[in-house]
Image (cartoon, rainbow, N blue to C red; front, side):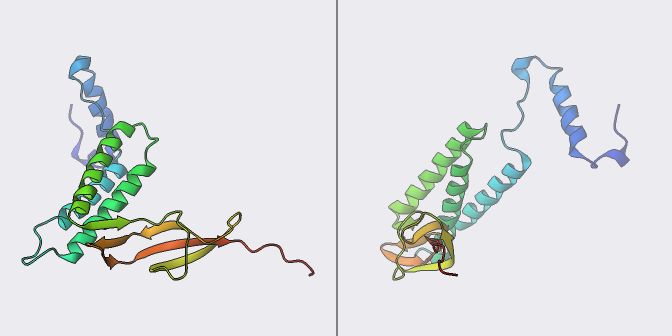
Length: 179
């Protein structure tokens, strides 16, 4: 029995149910398992891979294109950071494999002279060559610390080609007395 054409495309839920039920016709060893990533995760991975693919195309004649290297470095850094946040999910084994691929790509960039520097947790000094996007009062801090790196510092053969962007935590002001 076919579904009338007016009902197709309304919801992907019906097609998923039909696909799951269709798998029951086959012996267990021939059933296709559901994908290990949900739609949002699959879209995110496709987007990151497209960014990395664009960034790793043939370099311009005469040397490496700095913009391409920056895009590759930042894309790989963001992908690795995102994957590190997803460790506890059920598909952790698959994500570990993807993390290894990203680490191998990052190592290849390092072997080519590109260093990606993250600043999370590092003490902050106003003389540092970092772009501070925000200061945030944090109780319990005794000195200024980088809370989050929003864009890493990137060095190519020892020369900075991208300044890092960070959020800095500073000691929260104590309660004022004598009001």
